[in-house]
Structure formats: C-alpha cells, structure tokens
Length: 225
Length: 352
Image (cartoon, rainbow over all chains, first blue to last red; front, side):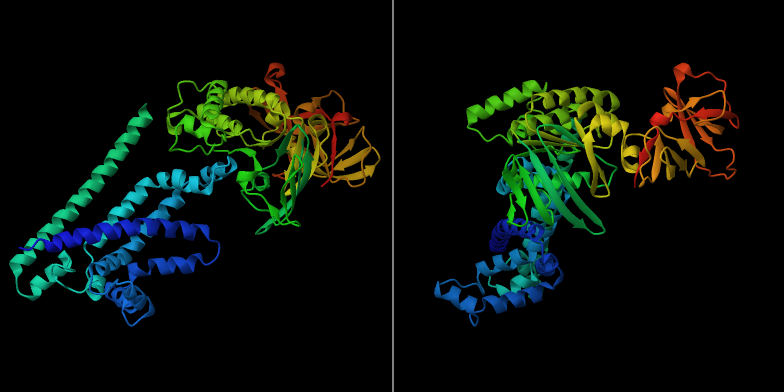
C-alpha cells in the first residue's frame, strides 16, 4: 500500500486550514465592519458551502486555467495550479472557507458590544481591540471553526478532482484514492483508506469534545474559587 | 474647563435633540428608561454619531457636523462607566486597569498600583473579572476609567446592577471620586435620591428633549413640568385648569385648590407630594372629605389611596397619602371618609 495519499491529504488539509484560518477571520471582520453590502458579501462568502463541490471546482478551473488571464499570469511565473498540489490546496481551502468564516462571524457577534465600546473610550487601538479582545474572546468558536474546516479540507473530493485531478503520488488524496480503488475493483485498498479516514475523523472529534469538556471544567473550577 | 453639547439624532420614530452645557460640576441627567440618556452619553463619547450638532470639551472640538469634525472615541479622552461595567473578561484586574494608561512601563506600573490601592483591590490583581463580586467589578471599572486620566467622566446608572447595601458603599466611593476630580461629571440615573445626594444640578430628559436644568434644590422643590415632578417622586399629579390668580381646578380629583404662588396661564397639571397631605378637623379652605379606598402597608410607611366621594366610578383617580409608621395610629379603615388638607404652599404648578 502506497502511503502517498495520506501524506498528500495531510499536507493539503494543513496548508488549506492555515490559509482558511486567516482568510475566514479576516472575512468575518470585514463583513462586520462594513456598513453597506453586508448581505451581498455574506452570500459570496457562503456560496462555496451551498454549491456542489464539482461546480466550485469548475469555477476554479475557469479562473486558474491557462486560457485565462490569472492562469496565464501565474504561468509566466512558472506557477501551475491546474493538476498540481497547489491546485488541491486551493480547492480544499475554497470549500472549507465558509465554515471558518461563518463560525468566526458567529463568535464575534456573541461578544458584548459594550466591552468593545469601553476599549475604544479607553483609547485602545482598533488593532489591539481585534487581536487582544475580539479574537481571544471568540477563542472556542474560532477553534471549533478551525477543526470543522480541517475535517472538511481533509475529506475534500469534488473540487479537488476537478482542479487537481487524480495523479498518484502527486495530487491523489485519500478521498480520491478511495474512488480510484473502488473504480478499479480493489475493495481491499478502499477498505484500508476508509478505515484510515474514519480513524482520523474520530480522533479529531474526540479531541474536540475532550477540549470543550476541559474548558467547561476549568470554568466551573474558576467560578468556585 | 467645560462641556458644551448641542446634538440631534434621529433613530426611527425617536428623535434625540439635546442642548446643555456644564462647568466643573456634577450634572445629573435624570429620565425614565428609553428617554435617550445613554444615547446622549454615547454621542459624547464618540460611540454613536449624531446627525448634526456640536460637542466641545475643554475648548477641544470633539464633534462639529458643520466643520466635519468627528474625533474617534480614542481621541476624545472621555471616561465612560458602562451600566454592566464592560470589563474585559479575558484580562486580569491588573491588565484591565492598564488598558487606558498611556505611559512608559515604569510609570504605567505606578499608576496601576496607585489605582489598585485607591480602590481596595489589593490581592485581586491577578484575578479575572468573573472571579470578582459585583462591587469589586465596579471598583475595577472605576479604577480603569480613572487610570486613563479622562477629561470628562460619564457614569451610566452606576448603581443599577448592585444590591441595596452595596449601593451605599459604592456611592461613598463615587463621592470621593467626585471630590478629587476636577472636571465635568455627567451622571445618568433614574433614581431621584441618588441624584439629590450626589449632584449639584439636574437636567430632566424626557422623550429625547431636555425639559429643564436647574440646581437640585429648586429642581426638587419646584419642578416645572409633569415629567420632572414625576421623576422627583411626586405621586399625585392631576390635569389642571386655571380659575384665577390663586385658584386651580384639579380635574382628575374634581377639587378646587387655593395656591400660594400665582397660577401661570399655561398651567396644565398640578402636583402634590403624598407626605404633605394632612388630616384636618373641619372642611373648608383646602380641606376636603375624601374616601379611603385602600390602605397598603409599605416598609416604613402606610400608603392610603383615597378618592373623591362624589366620583362613584370604579377607576376614579386616586390621591396617595403617605403616613410614616411612627405616627400611624390604627384609626383609619377602608371606605371611611376623612377630611384631608392640601397646604397651599406645597401645591406644584406644572406645565406640559
């Protein structure tokens, strides 16, 4: 059994989650900050969640294909997105982005607006308010969003196969490997990958629950003090 | 050192339109909930933007719609104590107090330590807000506000979230702050007693407009509008019609009252404080027979609800009479007719 799909999947999921983490938070901040066009932007940011992944993959193919300005521009720098690891990362990041954006936004909206007002009257800069107040106070929400985005990126199939293809050892992730194995009638291999994906997902959820229970216990302990 | 405010702001059906100025004094803004008290403070702090107007603090223009000046809250140096204190839950007491201090590390440390001592927070420095009691939380909020050395202090219902016994302690704390602060203090409240004890002047805000501003003694002795009379705790208010220079008809109670003061032409209401009513032996002058509808026992007084016996309707407007329990003798009962007098000097003549 080749281990390359596992390594590629983890690479893709980690890098995509890293990108989504910052983009999702920045997008949530932007939407809450602007006064006009909030709804339109929200629709745009949420679209990858509701559109079929193949359609997202098709759009990405249009944008990054070498027939298009952006694809051509990237090609002149020697960057090829289509049928490359980079493509797989972009596909996973796009599809997992709305999960991060939505949970981060929800967490930001939960914060008592008066604490932000108070920080302003005290002369704290907007940068300080965001990084030292809003982000820490939305900690649990942001972590939940990150985990959701990671699991979504890890299991990405539709957009990935559209943009990055199915090149063993190069762009073949675990999800794609399962599909290929089933297509080829290799049940044995498919079972192995399914078992690995189930194990990783299970561990992730267990860690998440353990962590949230730990937080609850810690809070209860602090209240007793 | 002074504050001038002249702003207007439209919020749906509600229009805030306030103008006042204050020197180095403690000015109370008194009003029922929803009258625009907090919105006024927020506009001065820069949290909300008025539609138009001008705000000047100590010769510094904070906001001027005509000149397109609108300083950020950060630039305004206005201390604001929020009703729920708005402490930063993720920061320790120490760090909370330090947020507003703009000074090099050593000087900052010293300022924080001073405030911790001043507000009896020693030993709490490393605790988080949710580990503190309500009173401690408020002391942290006060310390945090004063550590930034504000040019103006605004307190939004500072006692609203505290238990009775804590309110008194906190009030003493706030009194000391007022004594040592040289600048304007705006004190928003709906509690007349707090205002009377703590402030120099009071402004009444009613439906987004300032009814009037006056020093607290004349404010309590002779309020000019029905809204202010109500806020000062006057419980007997009736619509009124002028008869002659010293006589009015209280329409709700169907009584004709002689007043010491000259009745103004624009009189709309009369007010009479419930503890100034007195029992009399004979009818005549301002003494009328009234029927006791109900007797309610309060903590330290008896409240007697009375109606004009000529008005037989079930929801006849009542007149409240408050008798201290110390002098209460159990010789009244419901449905009894008693002779009650109105002191001509104590009748408040109100417009609007």
